[in-house]
Length: 105
Image (cartoon, rainbow, N blue to C red; front, side, top):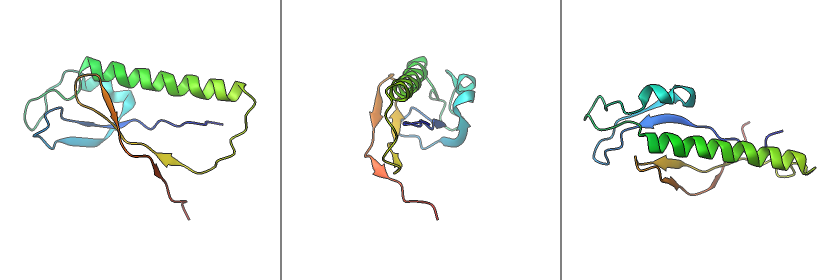
């Protein structure tokens, strides 16, 4: 049972004036985009700092799940929530508003 699920996907240009993004890119493919130029404006698509920060976030989520599994707690809240996270090339992550996902029918 996963208490926290981290769904990392998509790549976007670090240039705030460029709107290039490809949300089909999976986390496993991020190294292919490291220090690659944006096809639209030439700015960096993924810096080492952002990749490192994303990997650290993945490690935190994995550790949190291990701690919670070992604690004997049962997952009581079956609701799902989403928190958007964005990187800007500096290695700092910004977290958006937590939103409850509606149940699928």
